[in-house]
Length: 572
Picture (cartoon, rainbow, N blue to C red):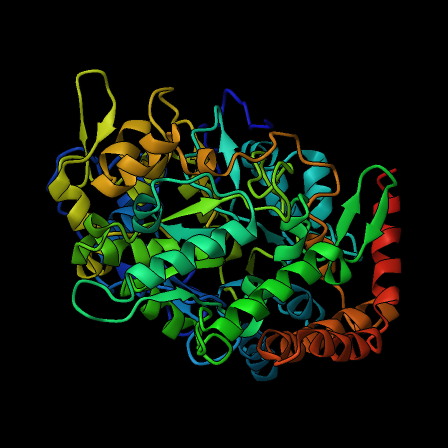
């Protein structure tokens, strides 16, 4: 595994920044009060923001993220503690009522931007002149620059004009990896289904649906009489990856996203037309005709999908952990559904038994297609960038973001290891408590891996003891039955280092219609959005697939494949 191993991670570069009167709308400056430290473990006068606290000036920045998220109260307790240390408070605004593309287009049309932006359409924002180059700021903070990415990785973010405009905040490991979750895509299944089936060895898609069908026949409803749903699919907007890309994984390939890279030939292949993809959609069509695929799959919104999962009625689906688990698992805990076996575990399915799978990526993944950027409307970009550095490079602040307040959100045992009580875990999962107290600034740079003390994990979910203690009994029994201690263990993927081009989607996500390949890529996406639901619902699969292929081939996918091949060739 490739991990970031450094000795000076939490040495913050000394730099004097001018305290201007805020960014975005309004003056953005408020007077700092005295934070209540109910746990006694966080000293609000220490850390990265000594001078900021002493000055009494706190600048409020705005941040728009084109993802759904949870709003924090303006008087959020940990937000205020971080503000006193850094001199910065951030008002995050999340996507509501629009697609990511629509929201980004609205920003560009209006010509006014928040201080920070994270969008799936960063190239459009860059082309509109909305983003500040970050090169000079990176040079001012060499500890952050040289730790966050390697020089080669930073080059992936450099745009055609020679500048870097955004930073991907996710996926970086400090020290030794302590990953316990599978943050990637998988076929998920509830542990109550596996327990009922006697914890069978499920390797293929056919075996997966055989078990779901059998469980539904024996258990059509939950204890309260509500009907179970065997399998649902999320198709809204860009999240239709939950429908369209499983074929590459079922064929044993990693998540290059938009294409398959054949390492033996070093050729780009189109997974949309592969035998594994055809077999996958034929199976979905079969299960739909039998009534085991949720008929609302192709019309439900993301919010409706999450609400449906949160009832505990859905037995299985394809998704990425980050897309559902952080919300759904909290609901399960609050409602006691975790104790009824409603938690999901991932399975590394393939088309045929005995095939290798690569659903789990053990290495750090550098996705250069999107990330956090500072807009041209930010009145104090120096302070904005310094804040990004402070909250990920200062261990005390990082602890506040992800562990909370010592004595209130976690305790420390005699060996220096962090842990939570059952009451603390339940409180941390409560939505009202999260809004009033928790402030993880989830789309700012953050670390996984090992704490600076060499003992603890950067995040509670990666702390081995905490991870196990937080599990409901049915989940514990499931792990024990399969002889694993982590979610990746449930998958059993090949452990290998990422190829230098991985993931290829970080290149295709920046394609525009200015090239034939970019035009084809856009048309292919529109075609799949329209036709794949029709394929799944088609009374005659073979006819439905042929009609889809006629529409698909009209998009000239060969133009897209050719341009992706040109990119791959640069790594030879």
